[in-house]
Amino acid sequence: HQGAQAAAPAQQQTQTVEAVTNVSEVSSEEVLQLQNELKTLKMAITSMQENGGAPRPKKVSTKTREGNFQANRTQIYQVLGEATHDDLREIKSVWVDVLDILDVGQKALLNNSEPVAASPTSLVVKFEYGILCERAEEDAELQEKMNNYLEKVIQKRVQLVPVTSKEWPELRQDYINQMKNPKKASSADEDSDDSAAQPTEEDEIVSKAVEFFGENIVEVIE
Image (spheres, rainbow, N blue to C red):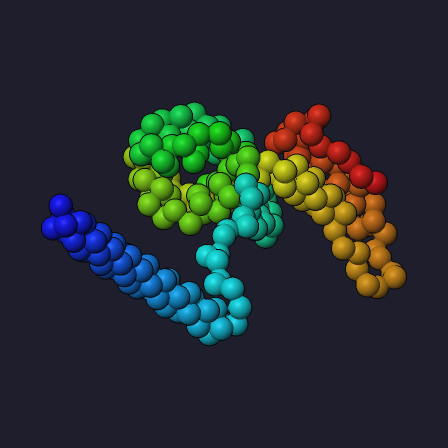
């Protein structure tokens, strides 16, 4: 009986030592984890200090659907100066076929586009948004495919001149107004014959504009 009593304290002491050892092991693991976390935190703070503040986020594009695109007014005026109904009609007659030979992405780009003016060497195409104009203007492969097909079916190659649906009415009307009201000569004295001929020239310009764009579109500004 006394031997059993002596064995009991010894067993309790052994269990206590094992418990203390386990606690020591857990504590060491926790300390190591905390040290690693502290090290990571210090590295983050160092990185922030080197960058002059919080970590710099990646640049996010601020372009909207309109983008930063602005139509080339000079190019469009040049096309309008040489534009004919026949050239535009010819392009429009094969425009759907042009879309069909493009790949899926290029076709989607031109899907809602519309040829609005054409000369023997250039084509003004209207897009809904500026970002689409930018992409079409920068896509050399798209333009090459388009011109290869046009050359095959109507024997011509054209330079693509994009414009947004928002810009087109304004540019078109500005062109008509400039043609009708050219800059006046600095000299105060003008030949009477030239003055008499001016209304006729203006009438011809307006008539040509009406013929090309339609009577409902052309606004004559006196």
